[in-house]
Image (cartoon, rainbow, N blue to C red; front, side, top):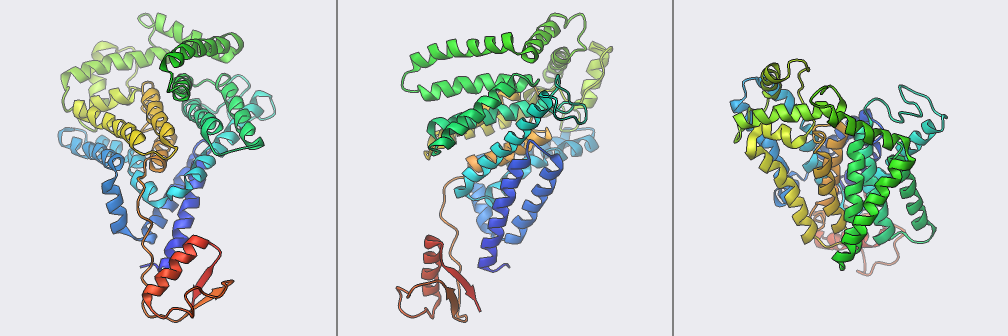
Length: 448
């Protein structure tokens, strides 16, 4: 078992690893994987399993996520394709790390984690600007397509959440002076970036979070909030539509795809509509428990052969709600929604200045999951686990002071004459010194 001082060091290392993980979310999937495994390794080495288990059991959000994941295991019982079911369970490992992140991190380091995520988003945003100005060339990016491949699917949603966090910090945060205006300028750059990149899910989330922000600012005057929202959201949309060729093109493409759906469903929006339409038939055939954890693709293939043979088969309907209800029925959908209901509940019960963000985060995910199964997408799955761990960790007692038995006297460097008289010779006095060290922060203790 690690010594108490070593536990403190491991805890500090894990806190920095979580900060690096938050920074890496919009930048590198490889870094995300490596850092997550390092956090897990440190979590095991640190010990305190009983304390961690108690904290997880006491946290409603943690237990709701674990119940949701347990349903995927139970869903193997009525799934014919066990191999596909195990693969689907494996894709949930990002969510399984939520209890680890929650008990590995430090509640007092929340601003460090959020700031690290915003720093990573700033780097990702600067890369898109370099591409936009023609100063950076790599992979398949171009001034017309600023993100690599389909990365806009995850980049723009994360960008929308980052914009909300920055505006929240500008309005209610502790940042003052020139730093506060720097935060506002950074938010403005991200808003502009939102309209020159292609992720429609993120753009939709941006408008939803902007509306929420207006209501939070004017929470004491709901009528004014409604009027301002009715004006600001259409005005922002219109400005983007008129002055951003990218945003204009994406809106026009969506309108065209919907209009041509019955003639040619093989478009970005058309395929999603077709997947949802066919999946609805699957839901009607097994409404309560679904087709099982691993049978979505096989069941969809049978329906597709009958309803739309000209279109290829999919293993993902690009909608988290549809996917879960197809696999696990209404029970699974209730478990999924229960996670977010408990997040909203904690937002209204924990009053520490973070309650507005606790409302925004589940609303953000409930919005983007309409267009993609974001809990199984790599980056956003980790985003959900890490941010949930940071936001919904309950306040608790500080870690217990180490119980030191009769040991050699401690060497104390830089300590003035002890208020306790001569150095302690028993365990209880060591505990007093331990608390003094934690409170002052300038005392360095090392045992012989």
